[in-house]
Each structure stands twice: as C-alpha cells, then as structure tokens.
Image (cartoon, rainbow, N blue to C red; front, top):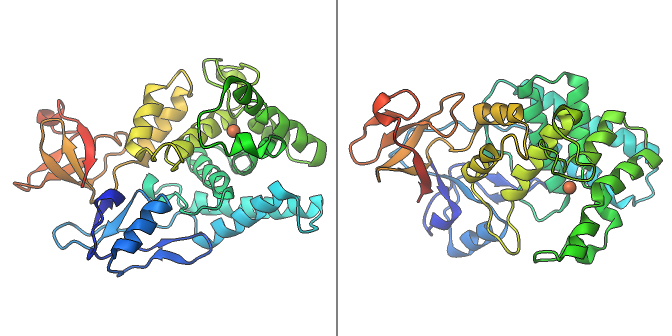
Length: 349
Ligand SMILES: [Fe+2]
C-alpha cells in the first residue's frame, strides 16, 4: 500500500487502512472502493491523505497510538468539562478527567519507543473538543520522548486537554470567526490563557504545574509571547512542549480560510522558529522522533527525481530513505554522500 494525499484520490482506488471517526464509525473502511461522493466527504472532514492498495510498493505497518475508544472517552470528558453540563459535579468531572489522562499516559508510555507517525495521530472529526484531545496526546508523546516522568506527563496531558478552557469566557462570535480577527478582537482572544488559569484555580484542584502550563501555552521561548512575556527556562518545560504541540495541531487542521498544512511543512516551520517561538530542545526531540513522511508516500526531490519513502532515519525526519520510481534506486538522503545536496521539495500524488 502507499500513502497519498486526499487531493490525489480517484474513484476506483481501494482503501488499505481504515480511518475512524472518534465515535468509532469508520469514515472509510479498509477495502472500500472509493466513489466520487466518498472522496468529497473525505476532503470535507479534512483528512489530508490515506493509505490505498497498491501492488507496486512495500507493505507498511500501521500502529494505533492511542486507541479510538480512548480518544472518544477523552473527547466526551473534555466536552463535559467545557460545557459544565449534564448535572455532573465539579468533583466528578475532575475524577473523570484524571482517569482518562492516566489511561492516555499509559498508552503513550507503552508506545514510547515507537517512532511516531504524525499523520496518524490526527482525529478526523468535526467535533470541536478533539483539537484539545489531539493536542494533549501529541504533547504527551513529545513529553515521553523528552523523558518527562509519569507525574509530569499527566500534568502535561491534562494541560493539553484543558489549555483553551479560557475560551469559554470569550464571545463565540470571536472564537468562531471564519476570518482574521481585528486588533480589538485579537486582544480579547489573547486573554484566554489567563482566563483559563484563573478559572481552573477558582474551581478545581489541579496541580500548580497544570494551571501554570495552561497560563503559559502561548508564551514564546524568546519572551515575545503572551500573556506575561516569560522566556526560556522561566517557562515550565510542560508549557514549552504544549506550545509546540498546539501550533502543530492548529496548523495541520483544516480551517475555513486555509487548507491544512502538511506535517512536513509544519515541522519545517517549527524548526525554522526554533529558539524564537519554540524551545530548541523540544524542537530537537520532535525533529528526531516524529515522522512527517509516512512510509509509502511519494515525494519529489530537489533535482526533480520522483521517489517513494521506504525507510526513516532517526534524528533526520526530513531526510528519509527513498526509492526512485523510474530506476528503483535506493537513496538514503541522510547517509549517502551523493544525496547530501538533495532535499525533498514536496509530497506528490
Ligand atoms: Fe490557546
């Protein structure tokens, strides 16, 4: 099978790996032969690409990082938390979310040594709360690879789930505006970390680390973020990780005014902003451990060669091993001296 972008899907192609909604319903089942309608729906929900059957390429193993049912539970709990509805007491909410955070951290730790394929951690659902769940899971994965202990990981995942809780105090007209915000609206929006922090302290009993990570999730490593312009090691490590996970998730999400960026494009952005927005040590862990080119995807090299990604190089996610399509030559973009001047310029169809 091979991974292709959604824009390249054509009727008649056969799906090699299912993609699920968080409710557990498949958006596409393994073995489905695509129709034009199904392809439109896949684009509509913002799926960037999927694995299709293709006899020509090597087969690829796909690992589920955090099970769909756990994500579903997490989404429900986070939704309850944001809406404070359904007659659930604050104490119960706190217990529910702590239980789900523990489960997520267990799963993340179980897969700690598996190189994470970034295209697989997205949840494809129109359900708002999954941005929070995806950010919590991704932050947990980065934190585990960074070497945080279990307690710190729980605080980090919790903060990931709740990082935008302060937005419940901001007008939905601003939150949901399908356009760029004006200055006044942007200033209002920038209050959400502080509003969330104060709300969590007022109503709940999370650790200081959770509350502070929520407060600091828009701070920049160089001190130019908000709300307090804190910098460097003055910021909690959990805040520095959450910041990167949040930006990653936001940029790969489909928005009304912008198509999603590819994981490789976002990693280029994050690497380019290392030391500015992002902690270089966090960027280093991400660039070593998170795959942005799924095995089996087609790419174009800077010399025009078309190739298929056939292997990953730990520490060099942007320089995998590829096989050229025309003459089946294996090129290790990391180790082959002749290939050092070549780069991947894009994923192709
Ligand atoms: Fe935020």
